[in-house]
Amino acid sequence: MTKHEKLLLCILANTDEPVGKPFYDSRSFIVSYWIMSGIPTKTESRPLSTSSGQKYTKPIIVKTWNTDEEKLDFLQKFGGQMSNSIFHEYNLTSMDALDNKPHFTDTELRLLERLSAGEFDGPINHYWEKTGFCEIRNGVPIQFSQGKSTRVFDGKENETVPGRIRVYLRYDTDEMKIRFFRTFGREMTDEEVQKYYWDNWEKRYQK
Image (cartoon, rainbow, N blue to C red; front, top):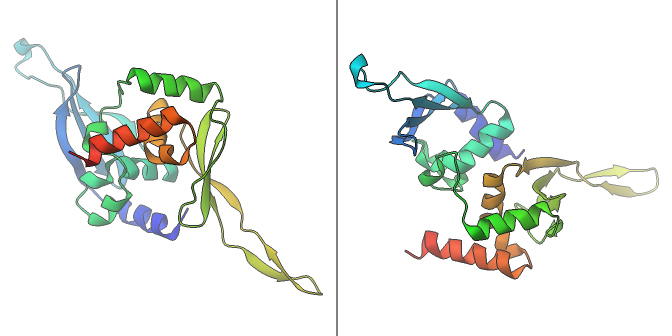
């Protein structure tokens, strides 16, 4: 975890606010995202029969992001919809990713199948902040961070000891794996992956 990420988590811990605007999902539920006492939270209000005199139930918490890793993943997805601009740069996707029921295209389903089969296993030619790297292991994309190296005197000369390598983020779910393709696809050698990356890039930035 970088110093900047630690700062983001510290600021998040003192945050209470709605994230974006409530919206209707495909089930006609009202879905809202909130930061409650520093915890990212998803709530749903379900429709009631009109005879009750109330159209929707009170919001019910259906999901929370509790661990530091989960909170950082939430900020990557939804930070652009929060009031504090420090979260905006950490945001990777737009508000239309808020519905947790992804609808994958045929291309995305095919890429997920190939990923699961191990076709893309191996290192990815991408280094971020000069202190980390990406690798796909057993069909799961993983970002690793590496601490600073240290110099130790062994009695004869100084020896450089590499920093400890830790898992920064695992792309476990199908939705996260698709986000991985959209973020790192251009660094991969597969033609279908690269085409998917650039097609998605054009949709997002060439409107």
